[in-house]
Image 1 (tube, rainbow, N blue to C red):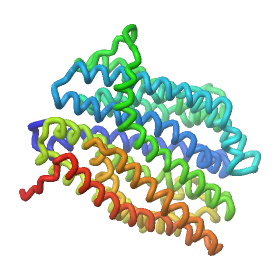
Image 2: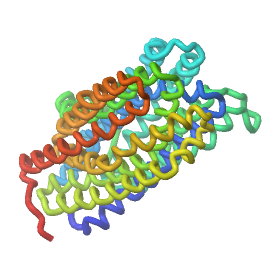
Image 3: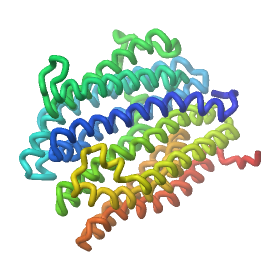
Image 4: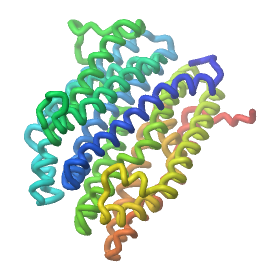
Length: 446
């Protein structure tokens, strides 16, 4: 972390994460492809269910960000006791969060679905899917927590293995459980949820075993776990802005679904398909991001600004290249992407211009993501929260609503590039501020 050449270190940390994120993106698309074979209403239901499901994942990943940053910083300071204390308190927070999500899954999902649509078939599909995913969500919280322990100590190859095992399990069992293959019962949309949960639980088991066998810096004795509210507060200081940032995306998706339902349910299905497709490009950037954050946090703890600057500049270059590739493909072959979801003529008519217009935001997104995450690694997670709030709540939603008043659905999609352009200026400004406040603003000339 402190002496390997930055490019080699970043690639060694990020490539396993990028691969695992690509597999996760593949799962996201394959899952929806199989669901779309049931009906367009089933695909719409999964899209409508996404915001609540994503909040659950946002909470688990958000606490993972706090665990990752504090663990890496403690290891950079050679404080192994504190690193273990961080791991224990992070695990407690993940388990408590899981309990809350299970309660929401048991009692709140039907109200959530009906707040967006009164179409009974869509509501039924969504409630079935969400209850299974949320009431059996223990696997996702544990797997993410233990995966971050490995990632924080630089063992990203094992982190990749955890995600790969879960995603591959999911992909294999999706068609088996949805359509009743190989002697299994035909479960329909419940099968898609069951495959998701099964993948998460297997990931959790693998993550626990790998930590016990391959991560000697982190020791968790479950018999000695005691809450440390001060340390939990430090984790939350970093994690809560990340949770808010990711959850804002869920709020945005929820409101966008409400806006789009006023035009046609097919527009909601298109929006859901876009979210699955864009993950092929955003997920690798997030994988790159996950490799970058512990490097910057470690070198911040070690007070090495040169390495911080070179690392985030390399990460930004790679991120921009990935997003430019995504932009080109969305512009050139949107009909091919939509064909994966067995798109009807109406879905193609709405989806082709939608994908082309929304993907304009790809031109700026890579810079925004890397800048925001650099702020998090330096202990200024709240800056990332400001960026997300401004982009999605202050700009995207009002823009989408105002454009919807024109009565032209195609205009609504332009809200995405408008919001991302604003985010570009704000993220660069706050990155500069974070570097200056931490004393890491040294100008690199070579």
